[in-house]
Figure 1 (cartoon, rainbow, N blue to C red):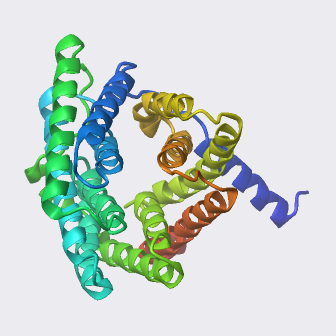
Figure 2 (tube, helix red, strand yellow):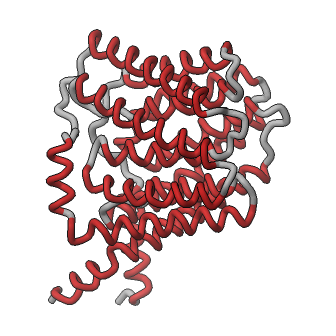
Length: 354
């Protein structure tokens, strides 16, 4: 007979294999063209703009506007974009105004994270919008030369480009899927229904994100962003989903980082690397639904290749290793937050099992 450890290892093997399996469905193939067109147009605007850091910031904003999408009617897709743009504008401006004071930044960041924890229970578009706002806020805290008005201008341009391309796609090939979209009324109903776990989850979400940010501050100005972003994106208002995303994020990060380092080493031409990054963007909308680990891997390749192209000195293996460490440690914080948020529920469930 198999020992207890062998049975546990077998269960982990099955769980990991299921977590890494492909799901059915996903957006139509031309959604990838929408992503590429949005990113290219935003990058071109940034290159010809006299705003400091415009090429990088415009590309980053276009990336989040691209991800702020779902399946279904154009009206719902544009509403999703509008909610996300509002949250991104709020998070970015708040970060820029508070970035010179760590205490002020923390005082603003904590309540926004708490609100995002509450919004996580409301579903699309509120879950994604509030998280995008937090992530962009963290990213803008590392951009020292960009002003609030310049950021809002770049945000407005990215929204306009995303909306125009999205509308053109809907005219040429309307999405017939029903999609998942919650109105404010439905969101409030979901929040009331989730009250037994709502506040505990939001407090846990805020606590572990704050702990990740504080730990990163001990090292330098970059680590807090990577650590905290990893914590924010994988912790989900569902224990099973949260654990699954942690496994997928860890696996995808390692796979994507290895592929990115290989590409950067073998392909020295920045134009070819830019084309590779754009090819990654084509698949991002598809695999965010079909499998999160592959989406995570493609995002890592996209980000690292873009950073390598935009950096005069290029990336080093040491920097990539640091980023991997940040992501994996962020997953550990997310695991802790999930255990804190859902631990009592797990214990009550076990107590009634035969």
